[in-house]
Length: 265
Image (cartoon, rainbow, N blue to C red; front, side):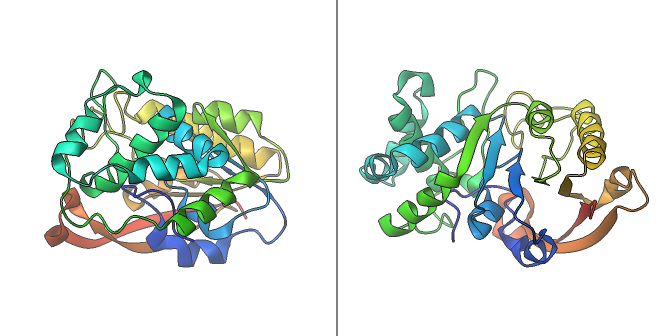
């Protein structure tokens, strides 16, 4: 099943190796940095929690869960032109209803440069329009089918540490795909005005031990250059996954990149 959204750093290319490592038992699936939730849509777990600090993203999933046809039809009324895109982009999400906010979020995502999500310090989406390499829009059947998968999920917008602490139980499986930590804000690639930093990475490492302590399972993907940070306990396992990345978002700058998958099972 295709995810609803295009997303920079999506794990669609890694689905093969990720499928092989998933726990076989009927766990509750929890994803604190859900983004496009590619693994969730691929697996369609019976019980799930999808979360992200991005309130617009979570509003989109909530609206797709409750009013999928309205979201699809409203977004489909918008022209895929630069002029229409810039018109939609300039309005604050706070000015819209939840359904309109979701539809416009979807439209912007499907027509923006490289599937990026970036806001300025005022919280306004400011990724440029892309006239090519955006892929086709999902058909209504594909869109509604993906939205139906969300029926099994609780969607929450909150900090990852809070979500993990609230869901610590032995039956949980946490899939974590956090942003790469940055020392300084990067004006083009940052997720939002509050970049994921070194202190957040340290909080995440503490959370991994907490997950392990209650007997729950986790799998986390991260940049191979700092993979040693995640081997906090000797019995945890690591494996390398090679993915094809668009460096800086341009097709002529594609190259292989290495990510490390760390699991406690």
